[in-house]
Image (cartoon, rainbow, N blue to C red; front, side):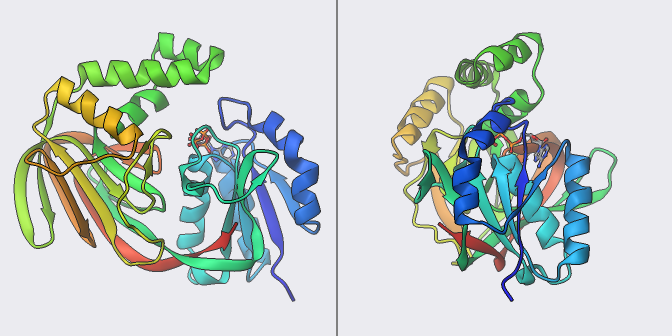
Length: 310
Ligand SMILES: Nc1ncnc2c1ncn2[C@@H]1O[C@H](COP(=O)(O)OP(=O)(O)OP(=O)(O)O)[C@@H](O)[C@H]1O
């Protein structure tokens, strides 16, 4: 018997536009997945409860996230914490603002990118992160898209923890809010002195930005042309160090076109593990979700999760 399909809808993604988007494509999605059950979640706590119920009652299931990258991240983490994650499969309907998980987009329903082919899946790597939180407790989580420290991580942190102006802008106009966040982050950003260990070398450097990639698309508009495959057992690592503000702006503008030319201040590599230590807490971002830590270890878990094809 085919595994049951559950569509988990985050109505609040894309600054509250998620529900409207879902209603617009709902009948077309259900034409492709006629037996799917819809589950609308009200909060992240509700999401955990609903997923726990699904896993309790179904030995195997296809769980389709209808939301943005944050929704994919939470569902992937719930699957990966199970004893037998490979019995389940993760799909996605890109209702969010950036939908980097689905890039490069392959299939659409009414212009919304999707991966909902329940007859075909691939095994996808994830990053396993172990870090010390602000209460000195060790925490674990996974990312499936990418992780970062530096200016892109702080941009995400600022976006997720808005002040008065940004809160208002987020309600009025998402793209203006993103541009405001990017500019205010770049103009206040200071390079972070951190010690990195990867590929058997340890170096202390002032980090302007560092992206650890499983999918080479970052924060919606930036991308790398690094050849990273979903199940190849490695991360793409891209570091910008010691950059002055203008150099950083230039680099980010080039990344909008997918250009990242290596040089003294730009390092690109492949790795399976990376350790980051910092004398003060730094913002660390996983799939767009941010946290602060002084000690972060990241390692690859090759082909750890089934992902539906487009
Ligand atoms: N299934 C869910 N139900 C309710 N709330 C959720 C759910 N999944 C995530 N959330 C909360 O909603 C926030 C936004 O969700 P999400 O990241 O999916 O959308 P987005 O920010 O519009 O998209 P993107 O990350 O692609 O830009 C998350 O940070 C999380 O706190």
